Image 1 (cartoon, one colour):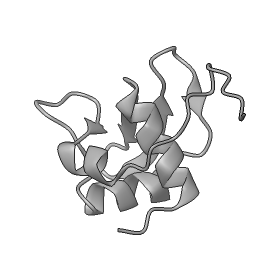
Image 2 (cartoon, helix red, strand yellow):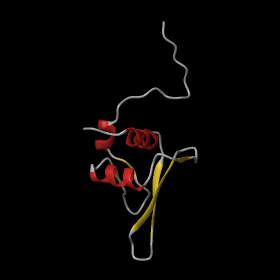
Image 3 (spheres, helix red, strand yellow):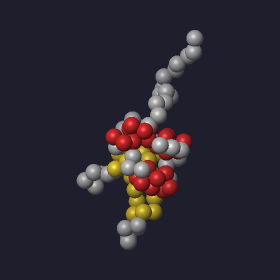
Length: 91
C-alpha cells in the first residue's frame, strides 16, 4: 500500500506510543487533528488530511472514545526506519 511521507512519520510516532487527538465543532464536524508523541511534542506533519487518509485506510482507530492509535493494519504497512536517537555508522 502506498503511504506518503507525512503518513509514514505519523505512523512512526503512533507506533512509538503517540496519540492523535481530534477537535470537533458544535455540530460534531472535525475541525482539527493533532498528533502528540509519547514525549508530549506535537508532530507538524499530521493534519486533518493525513488523519482522514489514515483512518480511511484503517491504519488508525479509536476505541471507547479514547485518542486514535495505530492498528495492527497500520503496523503491518509501516516501513522500518532507524530510530533518530541511535547513531548507526556504516563500515
